[in-house]
Length: 428
Image 1 (cartoon, rainbow, N blue to C red):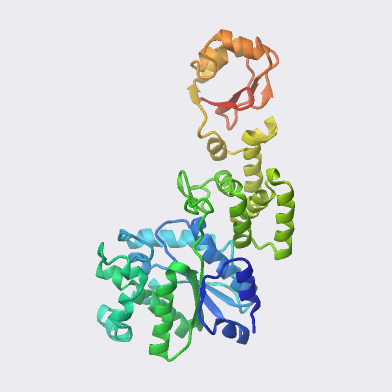
Image 2: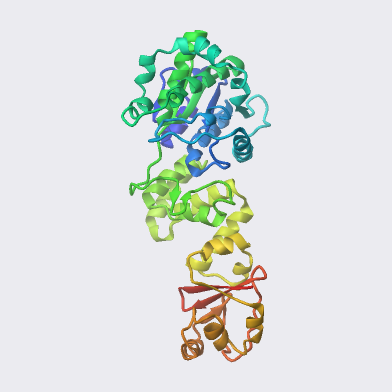
């Protein structure tokens, strides 16, 4: 008998492996399941969105989601998919990271909806009181070295070498599953496909130590159609924290998806129903240049991660460079978005006094701005006369007028030469 949750995950392309009996368990009763998150940074990134969405779908299907933040395992470091051991973090850094990640998880999961309310747990809470000898006596004896050596996360590192710390990671994660099974009735662990070995160590520990039965579900690791790594931009990770990745850059990441990727991402990262997604794909295929899939995807995720106001600002910012926009659109941008949008354009700094002393726009856009915009007064005069110059998106009609500029954020203005040449001037 099929299960609605499993069917939902299948059509969205979110199941890589699933332990036999999982569907039967989900059909039998409300089931508690969990995903673990690594607190090596004070923000989650879009690579974490797949396991987050697994929890979201679990809760939407009437089951109880647990988000485990690894205060203890973060001190060790998971070797899965890694070519080198990660640096260990101290307790103060870990606690800061954990608190930041908790706040982000609360944007996705409902923590106050009755019996299937989401719960956040920290594995440091139970590991802090377990001694080494106690652990190897009560846990280590149940899992053989042969079993541990057979895991890909171990085999792939044998040539380059791995520490005993990393080698034992699967035991520590396996114990997490056992603890949650015993204390909270968790019967399913979910994660990326690279976590399969660690997860089944947990199911094996539950079988041997508690004579219980537990299950595993993993999602495929997301790959982009062009072979580049999902979740990375030129600046590194695409973070959920707006201080690390501005809403504008976040929005742009999804907006710039290829058609093939957008069709995949909109299934995985949004909650839009199947019929609506298929209708969007049909519309998109009729007019691909309008990028309907990408716009819908980018808007949905940006609004959920940030806010409607941040989404609107990101759209306004995108229109400034890539579409029709007005002076009013420019004025809506906060400073961080403004600087994100014009990060790559030529920039120059002038003083307040220099701006005040300018007699006309010819001087301002040539000599005063250090010939960054126009190399000479003659060049400035010719282009201003032809009507191809804008300041803060307003066309300059009188080239001999004394500049009267409303500064953006009280310190910037934008000059535009032709359709695509932008210059950001800081007035200091």
